[in-house]
Length: 252
Ligand code: PGA
Image (cartoon, rainbow, N blue to C red; front, side, top):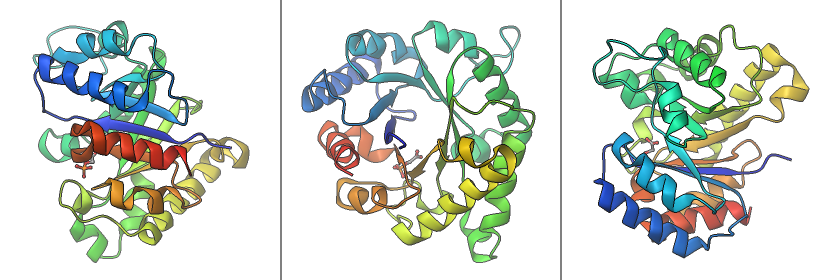
């Protein structure tokens, strides 16, 4: 039985004070002892500590939006896995499509980041997903399979891995994949995992859906057999909407 997991990806939104306010509001919507499903929040780096302090004593987890594959050194603008771990994160998002699209991330750099994060004891949310052109060209399956295979190259133990399937055309656009469209790709991802790691391991891995999830479509998506929660962007910036999505997952 896979526990559903909902993570709010705040992207480049909110100052430290605004982040703290949002975290406080989410906590008060859910109650500190909330245990219906696994929940995380991914603020910007400067806000990690403030949000982490607020989450202490709750079941909610602190998540970083990215991390570098070197420990330290001359990498201006980057933050390493051991730094986000020391800031209190238990999870890190790696390979988000915005990283791939705007910051030159490739399957190879995603793979390096995943290996480093896992070796530092972080749990990883690896994002995969096709663009609109790829979907229209009928290569969704090939693209997503390659992202999974290359992202996990040389990773022997995936027990600390979550995969987020996020079709690029659905992110921040208001266009959600239908639950059937999403389920088809989630099923394909699990088949790739079965080939790589065997049935027993693959059946335990959570696969989140991301891309314009909102309170009105969350329950239908989370009811699908291979959709194990969501990576939530825009809707996670509203405590009420985020809490409604979390409750939809908890009730599935
Ligand atoms: P969205 O973003 O919910 O705003 O579409 C999802 C994501 O990018 O993780």
